[in-house]
Amino acid sequence: MSKRNAGNYKTPLTLFALAVAVYGILGWMDVANYAQGGWNTDGNNTVTEVLPGSPAEAAGLAVGDYILSLDGIATTDARSLSRRARPAVGETWEFVVERDGDTHSLDVTFAEPVMERKLIAHAGFFVGYCFIVFTLLAFLKRQTDSTLILAIAGTLCSLAFITGPYFATHTLRSVDNAVSTLLVFLGIASILNFVLLHFRSGSNRGIYIPALAAGAFIGYRILATPEATTALNTFGNIFIGLIVASYLVVSLMCVVRAYRSTSPKDRASQGLNLMMIGALIGLLPALTAVLSGVVAPRVVLPGQSFYFLSLVFLPLTWSLAMLKASAPER
View 1 (cartoon, helix red, strand yellow):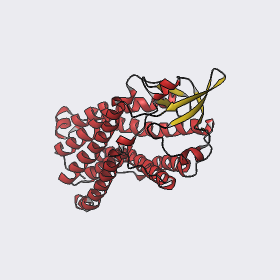
View 2: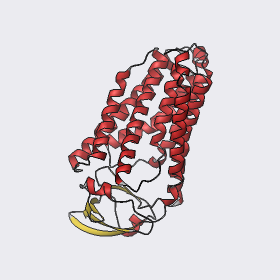
View 3: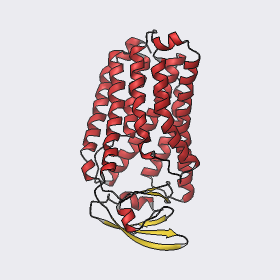
View 4: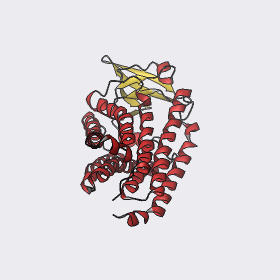
């Protein structure tokens, strides 16, 4: 793809980025309607964290509890749970949990999120918009193959941090969730595609196959809603985690390898110093969280809820690196 051809994507990519931005704004306006329960699980219904001062803590939910049902619906009944509307502030759900071999019934009354949760939600939108804005600006200022793929990656990956409006209709919610998830996986694959294209002068469409497989698996679970058995939950967590981790690891290794094989003078002229900083600060915390979820899903790392904030360095430094690079682009 030549520089001239890359420029042909200026209008459609800009319009797509604007559409994603508007989608995110509608979601950001809905943050005030979020209701907090205040618990996290390992992806297989075992409670790994109960937030201090949360409704879950007030109801007596404890780390290690295995959630059997939510508001009368078994946690294995993915179809019924997906059709259940999200809880509203003040609404009470009955939780049935298994603890030390005994069954307990707990009433969790959902409340408005505490300030920390609201800040995390707003920070997520901030990071998402940084992915869109910085990478798109780099492409608009320097329309090359590399900046095109970077802008595509940034726009798609932004959907990992921003959410759209809440749809009351189950079908719309499911389609929205499935499509957004697939686009995020394609965005993660595009990050690796960008690195390969920028450093190796070539693109490999085959790298998108694992992303498509991951998106298809998640789409199947969202749209077909098979029974959420322990085996399926465990397989899903490991399968998705390994795919995401593989993309991040290979991307990081490619940047490190290019950095080590380039002279200090060329590193500066090619923007490699910035890319190295972004790769280390941006990718390592995310990679740590992903691998932890695969190897030890019940372990909660200190400050894990804030790890995603480091990812803002990725679009910032890599976009600046593309503008700084003086080497001819492909």
